[in-house]
Image (cartoon, rainbow, N blue to C red; front, side):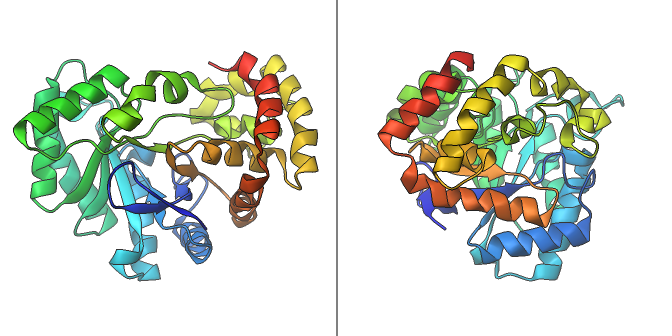
Length: 326
């Protein structure tokens, strides 16, 4: 396993990490989570990603129970969670959903700590931007959470470059903890935010990236070329919004051209896609997901392709995928 600094911070995270979105509770119970986390850890993975909203809190509970049973030294792993949507999606608690106001954030961290059974969470994210709350209020609340010892670093997820820079500037002006990382979607068919919009932030503020969906929710495995298979992520009822993207004819045709490149490098299409994301030097870690141990082990094999992605190979990949990328 390789390790990279989280942006300009001193924290080092594994190049590949393991996330819980969709899988925990929906496809993976505590026993399976423990098994896969143990296998990932044994392979050198030290970062495990979560969010308050995943399975309405049950994902955090499952990960927390797995961590308790694994009993790793706390210094040896990094855990994250994210706040914005809250748990009361259909209730009347207006200050507990779709917000980043101070009241919500200071209570949300306590809920996550309780569900995960931890004294602190390493990385906390503002899961989406909140146009109705001043950035200064959000930045101060995140700073206070860190000063209270409940988290170590804070960042954003799917924020615009302008909002990230504004949060960094207000924190810098007040001497608060500044946002250290962003968690954007990044894969062969989704590039512009990471490669263009954020381009100045890497040098200007030292932004680190913990990217998600390297396989485009499974599209880049190639398994959706003949439709939606039973038991796949695309077959889940709560993932119905992804189906049109997963069976996109042009993108699936491009996969047929990418597959021989992967095979020539000694890997699979999925491994090629993950390695391509990790090849970007601005990416601190690539968050992978898995519902089965064999899938996790296959994903980790992407590391074997990193050194094989020469400039020439990258040009061939880009010639096929870039015209279809957003």
